[in-house]
Length: 342
View 1 (cartoon, helix red, strand yellow):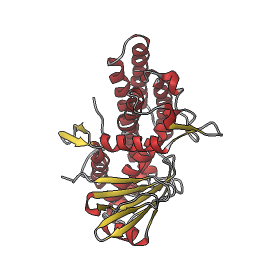
View 2 (cartoon, rainbow, N blue to C red; view 1 turned 180 degrees about the horizontal axis):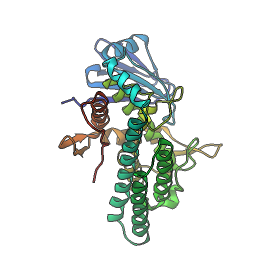
View 3 (tube, helix red, strand yellow; view 1 turned 30 degrees about the vertical axis):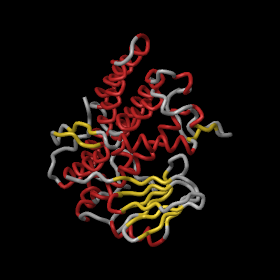
View 4 (tube, rainbow, N blue to C red; view 1 turned 60 degrees about the vertical axis):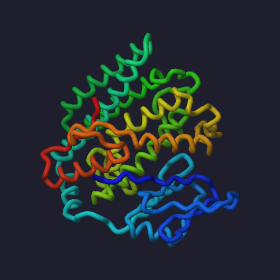
């Protein structure tokens, strides 16, 4: 059983991180006291804009297999440091061959999208059970649309057609987002948009997707898979195609549901978001602290995993699925099954 460790998030500009024996020392010139955290309890460091780490800490983390990610204030990925590549190179060879084999790529792309649509449908159905009136009707109608998209997915003959089904299903799903919110007018929810996100909900989703990417890419690297060679998403320089693939099945339940819950429970207020001159939104420092706290707490929640026959903490789900994908690529499993919840 893999031990559930913690990810250290540091967001205050001007903060510096230092190696202090077997611990990380966090320093900020405006804060008194000496804050030490044992490295043995940390699996990853996520640093936002304006936060620095000393060379000796970066090298120690690389030697220990502990990655460090730098993100913008909006949660967009900037750079990541890791140690020596882990895993068997034969696994990466098998991954590359699968990406070049039409049949295997088609099967894996179909599994990725099927998992995403299934879990998105579950988000809508669960919300419909907890509401009444026109919201319930709209959510159930959208869930039926997604059921139809799953049937259409089974008929897709190429990866391009699979991408087309995924795009239509995503449009249907995000069109139902306003009905997931108890106060959609306050949050101005109007489907999915990004770069920049033009309402608080999309701002929150983009930030949390950034956190999910960090977790998924780290899991792939830990297993020894190449995060940049995927099956659904095309291979492009600088694009972690496999990380984006594996993220799909987790987005609805681990991110979308959390974002909606936070807004419905008023864990965030309008002043936790800042309107930008370009029409976009970003989280304030206080808003980011609240979201990171909720994200860390949500990662401790256990979810059923039907293939394993037991519950698994959300923080370990990407690692479990990365290992199952590796087993499939090595030929130990006949097919890759995405993580889904009924």
